[in-house]
Image (tube, rainbow, N blue to C red):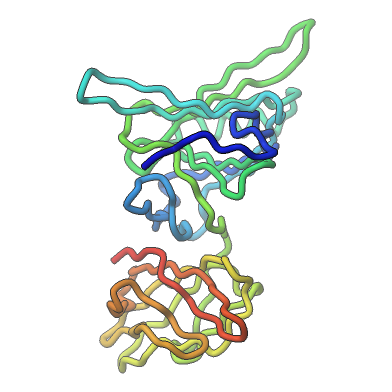
Length: 271
C-alpha cells in the first residue's frame, strides 16, 4: 500500500484542535466492545454497557490536551503505550471528587477533534489506562493536570471509532418480528427471549444513513434469527451467514440508504 503525498487545501500534519469534553468509561462497565476490523485500527459498532455504568464527561482545556503514544520493547517485539493528557482549570469540589473517584480505576478515554469525522479510543480491554493526576495551586494559577496512561503495553494503536456512545438502557424490543429503528430508540436494542423462534424483521428504519445500531440477543429456548435479505429494510450479512440472537450475542449494523430503499449492513458481530 502506497501512502504518497496528498495535496489538498488542508495540511494533513496541521494540529487538530481537541473537543473540550472527553468521555471516560470504566472497563468494568463495558459488556461489549466495538470490534476492530482486519486492519486493526477502525472500530466497528458500538460499546454496550452494564446497568448503571461508571462513566464521566470531563472538561479539559482544548489547547492543553494531547494524545500521544510511544513505542516500547526490543527488536522484533515492539508494542505501544497509549496516553491522554489534559488540564482542568480551577480547583472546585467537582474536579477533586472526580479525581478521588477515578484513582486506580482501569478505564478508556474517548476523545474527538474539530477536524476529524471519527473519535479516538485510548486504552484497550486488556491494557486499559489509569489516571495519574497532578495539581497546581500557587501564585501562577490553580489547575489539575490529568494524565491517563497504560501500565501494560499493547499491540493496538489507539482506535478510530465512528459509532455512538449510548449509555442509556438498551431499548427493549417486544416483538422480534417488528423491530423499529429510530432516533428515539437510540443505538442499542435488546431483543426478547423466545420460546418459539421467529425471524428478526425490521418494521421501520428512520435513523440517518451511516448510523451504527447494535442488537443484543435475548436467547431463550428458541432464539430469534436474523437472515440476509434483498427487500427494503433487510439486513445484509457478511457471507450471508445468519445471526442467531443467543443470550448476550451482539451484532452491529450500519444504516445504508439507496434511493427509497434502506438496508442494514453488518459491521461486526460478537457471539
